[in-house]
Length: 394
Image 1 (cartoon, rainbow, N blue to C red):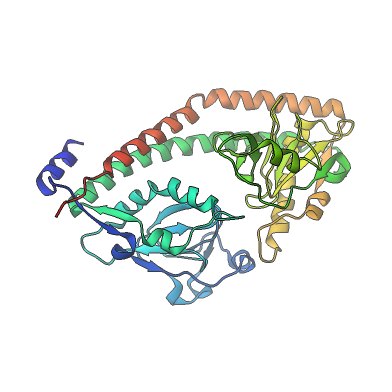
Image 2: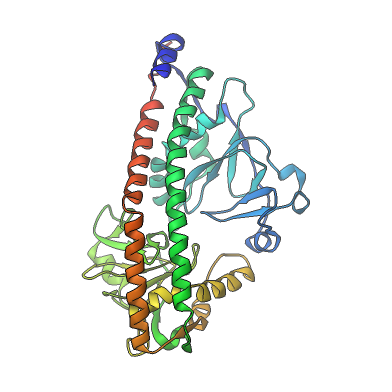
């Protein structure tokens, strides 16, 4: 980073000016479109990417939306509701009109530099969004008023080059990990493709919907499992939300989660599941359904694997495709899910093989998740360090 140090010493030794994002970049509106229209018009190879809430996207042809709503500038997309984050995109795009994006028309601004700085502000904005009510969200003034350092353009571009190198390495490691996981999914689907009796989900387990209220959040206490905590059959504890003992008792009036219960996300991402490990105290968040297996019909880990299999995923996809306004899986939809359930001894054989193969996959990528996490932390450290500038004193 010697070149960056040299540039700073030459071009801004006394500090840099700060401006608000609203002063610096042009804010762009999106397009009025419903979730149903996104599903109906989505064409995977179409040229225009449409951003919706969270991780939801679709791809449209130019004829599918007004020309004035297509943005062709390299931009920062503001995901303002649910998952609060910024995304850089440099191809034609649009987004739902409750979102917004920024691009620059100034010669002294590199919009990707702006993007990298905005990434340092995500945590602060998420904390503010969570305190605003039932569903985390931010408003336009929250981004318009963000103060951004603006060193000379050569420094902006050098910082972008350095951070791009970090992200490229992390992306390569993630791609390798994804390939190994796809290999495992293929093997899992092959094993689950075993003749068995057809059951509806309500035949094989107790189904208990979530409380339909937002809890009073606490900085620590009893974990509340939310849809984004359910990853690949496990509960991700790296990003937990908490309630106190009183709220926990209120949220477990219907049922108290216990070891080997399965939690199912019925709103985007629909169908993600996680199994509760031994002696793990928790309660359900909104949009998370608890499934307690009837062990005389389906052992819990077989049910866990079956819910991740192609047969169930295809049924979920069909319900989503004909949905109306919200990407949501109703309890009635959940009850109707069909599963192929072989005899208990065969289930145990399948579970043993999948557990063993899962172990082999973990061994084959041993170190990759840790390496990715380490690279991400390294990137975040240098990003925050590189984007911290002494303000210029007039």
